[in-house]
Amino acid sequence: VVGAIGPWNAETAYEADPQGKYPANQIPGAPGNYPYNGFFGNFIKYMHDMLVAIGRENCDAIAIHAYSHGYNPNLIFSDEKMGPPFQNYYYHFRTYLNQMWAIPTDFQDLPVYLTEANGDVDPTGARWPDTNSGWVKNAYKEINDWNQANNQQIRCAILYRWSRDDAWHIDGKGLVQQDLREAVAKNYTWRQVVAPQPQPQPQPQPQPQPQAQPASSQPIPRPPEPGYRTRYLSHNTPTTVTAGQSVPVSLTIRNAGNYTWVKDGDKPFRLGFQWINAQGQPVTIPPQLDFRTSLPRDIPPDGLVVLQAKLRSPDTAGVYQLRWDMVHEMVTWFITQGDAGLLVSPVTVSPVVVETKPEPAQPQPTPVPQPQPQPQPQPTPTPTPASVQIQNVIEQLPQHTSKRYARRETTAIKRIFIHHTATPANITVTRIAQFLVENRDLPGISYHFCVTDQGLAYQTQPLVAMAAHAGQDSRDSVGVALIGNFTDASPPEAQLNATAVVLAQLLGKLGLTTADI
Image (cartoon, rainbow, N blue to C red; front, top):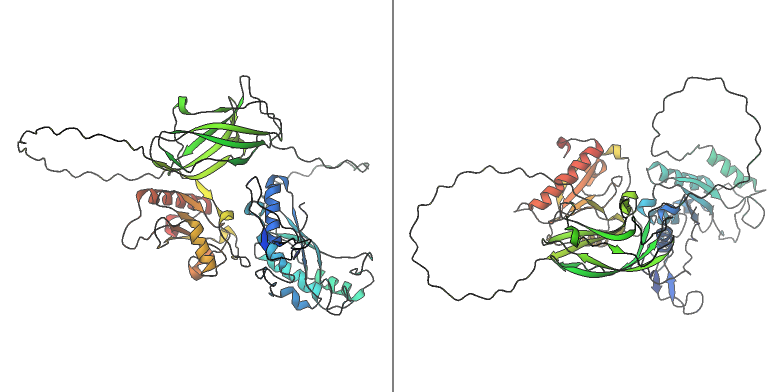
């Protein structure tokens, strides 16, 4: 369980991660002496970066803390914000919202435990005065309202504290305890968001009498690390190359699994690569150019290696995605075992420029007129959309510091809206999100999916988010946006094909039909 941050504690400032996982959280303008030394630390960003550094596979749950500055029950619902430079963060109990919104998307299936809650110090100086003010009831109502809105579930709210170890104890404070009893009487429960599948009922069998067993003192073992896992710490992969070119690339990689990568033998470990075109199809590289980079030595679990790899670009110009991936020769690619590999996207492959010398002019014979054949009508081929890889960029896009879209069950989605962004085709999804957040004061980008003119598809919001793409109709719909202005022109074929694939996947996932588009 990942320990909670201390809300409003801005003493932890750090520089950018040298492994490139996160930028610095330093905010200048703080006092020059200890503990700030000239920088405030963005404590909400610290929580996000801490989770990213730990990794989803190493987390079972997440802890948070929430307090108010006093025991007035209305402070539970207060939207008051902090002073600069944290003017976008809540000052009272709703600091829990900033913490919940900081949790990365791939951690949002984990349980959250609010392991400390109280009103800190009352304006009278008392630390939890003995009154039935309603503070406790309001705190549990606030968390229940959050849970019932189909958000990531907070499974408990633990009051600090019962025992008489400090002035915040509620042992012996009968009125505070009555406030708690009245809150418990509301019978608030967290939701099982994913309902379990019904199981066949077994026939009743006679049960043996239970035998007393000694209590086990053995700790629950930590699950083993997966066998095939990598962490790419640094690389200098170019994002622009010439078609048919071989280029050197340096990569620093950590063995994050529990297998030793052996360099020799009939099944060695090597580094490979895979190009993916704009239609989401893998590109075939001739075997003699499909370079595999050998290891300089055996790499044990948690070992580091710097590889000087050779990369061969596709022969055809275009916009591609590139994935680096380790391979256990004659056994498996790591990505087929659940490893993410290293995705570099987009990579522009430019055509080869061939310089030609003009040939001397030759006298040309006078052409003899020839009869021209009449053009015959040709049937228009029906484009068949190829499989498109939808890249999830939700975590990379700008988001509002204190707003989030309301959430829903995916079963509430009844239709799909197709939009165009009415922008130039080269506008990125990052720029669209930034504009909507900074200029329209929206929680984030208003589309769930965006498709470029090159046929690249991006998921930009989770399906459970009621992103504001269609006004009141956003409540039960998904927004798919084609980047470009198509008021007077049609989208290019690559964009249409990729959009068709995105729509087909959505219809299958949501159980909808083409009539719902």
